[in-house]
Length: 510
Ligand code: GLY
Figure 1 (cartoon, rainbow, N blue to C red):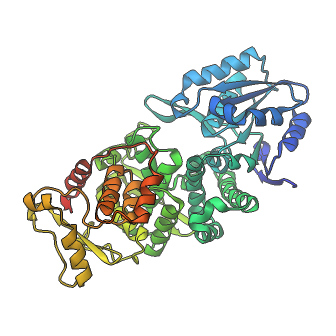
Figure 2 (cartoon, rainbow, N blue to C red):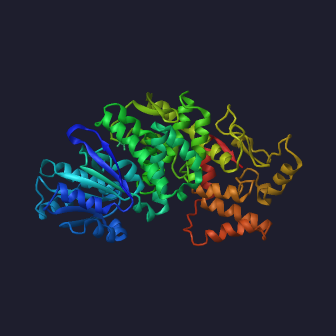
Figure 3 (cartoon, rainbow, N blue to C red):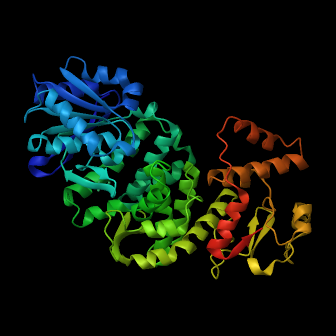
């Protein structure tokens, strides 16, 4: 297959991006042509080396090279690791005409790129990104750097690569979680600047993992093409390039307040995209239909859209603190239409103020989407949390704490709903009506799935356990439990979850 090429036009810093499957012979040809004779200095990490050791050898076959495998992970994206790369280059006699090859994901690319930008006042670097996230985002555009204890990416340099080799063969062996995380940046690119890509993603929906090689290359090329066009117009992020931060203002805050390492960057970006779309709706920029499509798409792709373990106060505190600078407002990219983004200066205080309403909407819309409720049914305008949530043909109630009323059967509810509510009441809750019940009144495997996807594993298990208690022959519930038999049990306590909800919204979820 002939690789496809895209040029990032930046004057004397212009470079080509090559796309294709198994394009290592092209890589070798490129190196032999532009860097003949010298040793190539390959920087990777131990995870990549253990998974792609053979690939690295295949890619570098016939080329004199040495390899440095860094400790993997965001926690090693620091100056100690940069020094390790400097030492590696010095020991390898790297000169001004040497070439660094960053072979790995975003952390490797940022660190190797930064070392190349600064060693001997700058040597050449090429990028071979092995994750979807690094293919569609970090390998292109020249941002390099590392974290300080005080904040992410506080030290860095713009240093454009000499070439980027994007090989979709790496995606075949990428684990699901990392592949999905990369899709968040693809969705970002579609929303911010490529309506055709957006339509394609909507059409593919939850079946994105089954894309053919050709379709993958198309999706990746479109995302990269959008990014490259932005970089060409604003290499140093003085204005337009800020639209690439779509979803990142709240996304970074979620990533940071949950503790780095808990969420992958792309997972936090997916949450940020959804939360910021709802903010955009509240600010009158983003339409409801687009928000519905986005929430539906992200959930269909398997992203949780909330991290229930993270308090809103932490998210609020982390917003705008990325660079350890306290600013009063941000240029927030907001989506006006698919593929069309606008930057709007928004006071941080306003974003923080909207957070409770945004989280409530996210939860409502997630439930509505999972259970196939048309948009609007579950989210009454007057309240961030509706009193009655219709779940298929079942209903449950969210009521103010102080009311402490008996579980409600809505007057307009049909007899089946009433029956469901009546049978759902636990004996314990009759004895202690002011206490929060052990599980939501509605118990369906789909609802359990939703709780599971939001990290509420103990609640999900309890729901399925209760379904099986009432109906031991329920095959779906049995299969659900069996599928999670080996899963790590994160016993997020139901009471703690409900108390958090109660505290955050002044409501009691029954
Ligand atoms: N990842 C955003 C940018 O490169 O500007």
